[in-house]
Length: 313
Image (tube, rainbow, N blue to C red; front, side, top):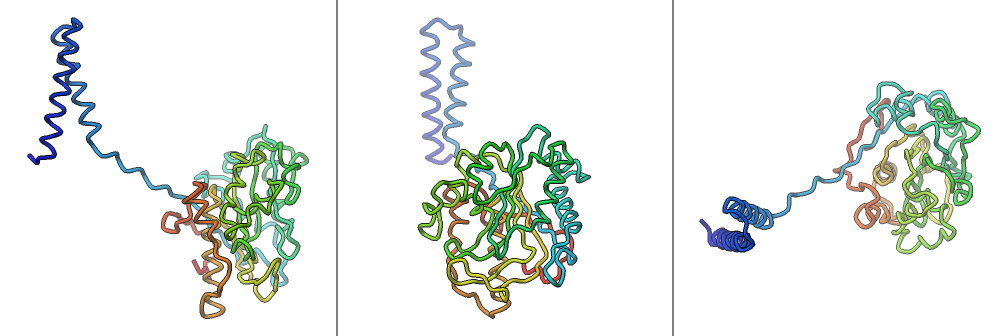
């Protein structure tokens, strides 16, 4: 026996003996004294053992693509994106039918809000918003009660009990990418407060009472993402391409981590090397500092559905 184990055994023995002596002193029977000593020894042994390792956090993201989702003229096919969303939520919730899957996300008594994005050059398509409203109505929430907002989210969506977070993927001057995490910045009355250090603290917006704990689904649209841009509000149609996909998950951080990797891979494919942009430090911080979700690509389980050509990730 090692010296370390001997020390533990002796300490356990003395502790157990002392406990037994105390039990005897207060008049407990001998059998009870032995039980007290045994319990004390077991507790000491448990304290001496190193804590069991915690299971690593993982996230599941569905990447669904369809070649018919976007036409050559950039028109979004509403029927196709509806089918894509149905397939994605079925895979995410492990349900056999779209009706069962959407019923897992939204309940008839919910007040539902869509946190959309209205940046004009690359807004959340109305076709996607209409599909979501119909799916919400199908589970018993009247469609005319569903609210859709972006810049007015702090007031328009404040009373909602369930939120669906949906926005297009693009590069962003201050945060590296505009994604699911950043989409909640408009729940704040001071969005600029999150701009320091490449918007590292964006995950804190998810703690605001107007949105905290309400998100049922995150949809990062990669139908026609923007993979490159320099300067505030930069947009160039040459840097937009029809990827015809979307990332769907319960985890906004995992969606953004994959979205950032997709844009990085596209820049390398186009330019032959990575181009310097604002670093996406807020994604790692959302995981490591704020615990909002999983940013490590090695801990994200991707379910791939549909069209796979030029997937890049």
